[in-house]
Image 1: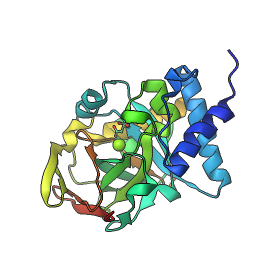
Image 2 (image 1 turned 30 degrees about the vertical axis):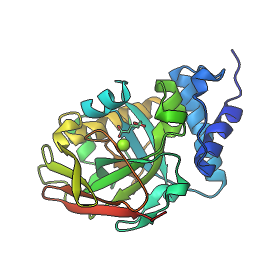
Image 3 (image 1 turned 30 degrees about the horizontal axis):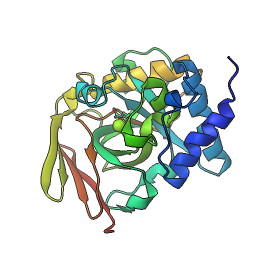
Image 4 (image 1 turned 120 degrees about the horizontal axis):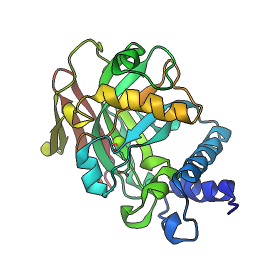
Length: 258
Ligand code: 0L1
Ligand code: MG
């Protein structure tokens, strides 16, 4: 079947840009396979580049059991980050810029060298300049936050915004660090970096392999978001969100009051 990937990309891109919920593509005549979904994702990000956004990294999705269980999907997926998605540590977001945002506790990697293809965890870590506590703000554009795997991939794996805390040496042992996600001073999700594929560095190696299969590379200066260590938590107006990661400190942001 011949599909107009650019037309489908315009649907998901406009939904993200104008914070409008849309029906699932798969329920609306666009039952894509996974390869087609990544083509739509690439075309929707190309529209962002045309508007002046620049690539800043890659995000992994469904790298923890908690996320797989929450969304009922078990295959690892990836999406693209741009500069317009970055929220400063301590910054503020507005609920009206999102459809139904949720937050996830993550670990971020900063690359000092390009990385692509099948690599060992040690080879992947040799490309890392620093690691940091990070929060991803995901926002599926689909009504009810419901999707199948191609739907969510086409929707850039629900990427919306990301917040990165202070960078740390990658030589610390970050395989099993306690992570506490707090909203208005109350812990809402507690987990460990070990929930991310038993070691977050495995998410980096997996990202390298998966984007390599698409003929892409992560570049020096890019960020890799390793994926949510726990289930995601829904945001509301006035929330103050903080993630505390053992040995790495705090990262956070707030949601403007309505
Ligand atoms: O970090 C993650 O596992 C994000 C998955 C993105 C898909 C979603 O849950 O909306
Ligand atoms: Mg995530």
